[in-house]
Amino acid sequence: MSVYLDYAATSPLRDEVLSVFTEHLKVIGNPSSVHSSGQAVRRLLEEAREIIAAAVGAHRSEIIFTSGGTESNNLAIKGLFWQRKNESVDRNIVISTGTEHHAVIDPIEWLVKHEGAEAKWLEVSHDGEINISSLQDYVDKNHERISFISIMWANNEIGVINDIAAITKIAARYQIPVHSDAVAAFGHTEVNFANSGLATLSISAHKVGGPVGIGALVVARSAKLEAIAHGGGQERGIRSGTLNAAGAQAFALAAKLAAQEHSAEEIRLSALRNDLVDRVLLIDPTAKLTGASLPRLANNAHFVFRGCSGDSLLFLLDQAGVCVSVGSACQAGINSASHVLLAMGRDEIDAWGCLRMTLGHESTQADVDAFIAALPAAIAGARKAGLAN
Ligand SMILES: Cc1ncc(COP(=O)(O)O)c(C=O)c1O
Image 1 (cartoon, helix red, strand yellow):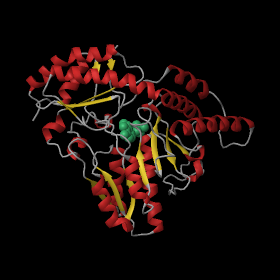
Image 2 (cartoon, helix red, strand yellow):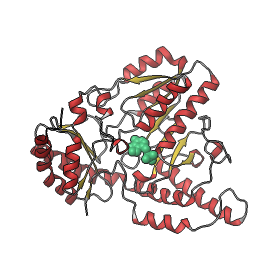
Image 3 (tube, helix red, strand yellow):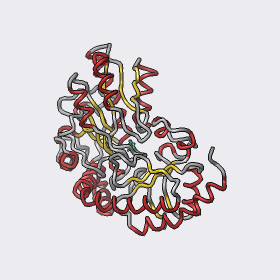
Image 4 (cartoon, protein in one colour):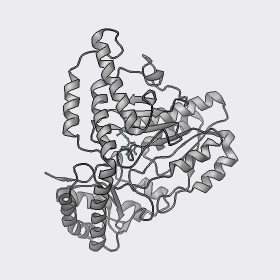
């Protein structure tokens, strides 16, 4: 059995969630049907909606089921852009950062290419901190043309937590909607939609012990979105398609457990993570912990090993039975430097030399010990291979 330290890519399905999921897969009925079978499935779905809403601090009517984080972000970004264009054709500026997940960057770039959007990529420091005062200045000067702002709650690669309250405060002065991708944050730090001032927020089940293929876009009751998929008019007409009741039940249980356990897990995982960080720095004092001075997710440790290729480290650790990551799993397989580190103004050597370890509900001290035992040989091998440049 390999040691799994890649929870930010996907997390193991919890046993109790698997039971709930499989139990409901055989339940017959389309939740939009009026007969009793359909209505029974509708009740399962509404019960799940209520539980997910409670876990994320939202009202049940604000939960729009989707297929996951990517769809939620696309729906928010395109839906907000078109809605704001309807209100005023001049509103075409989308504000975000180059450190976002590709599920945010790419739909914005698509809007630039096909819909006349103008992207404003905010400055991010070498550590991954957004420059809030430059955002304030930019918004004050351009508010009449700003469509919306999209800033992730916490970064999936480096674990840095953004100051969402400061961003929504700036936007609120001009009624500019703010979207946040909370896929990496939810379950690992407190995420409360009602207190956030956000218009929309994305979450995904498979990052919190639920199945792949279901997630939600939380849409404030006051927010307006154009639909991007048209059909049966489900989910307030925002997201058509027959609803996935078994997935929703499984997601609800995973979300409930993640929300219930997160305070205790934050303490347990940060102790494991801190031990991992200390021992990495003893093995290689030249390794640099990313975002060391900033608030970060308790389950994340991101390092730059200058002079090593992250891909070589990943490969050698995998050979030793330890699964880690160089960055976003969606980019894995594509040999490239981290776009997150490059957007932070780091050079190519840093951007090639990243290694991310992320922990979660099944992680133990033995996992950290196994990683630490395998690391010296991996670093030596990667340096010898001379793959960094
Ligand atoms: C921050 C972030 N946003 C979005 C996604 C995409 O989510 P999904 O895999 O549910 O489509 C991911 C997945 O890696 C992520 O980490």
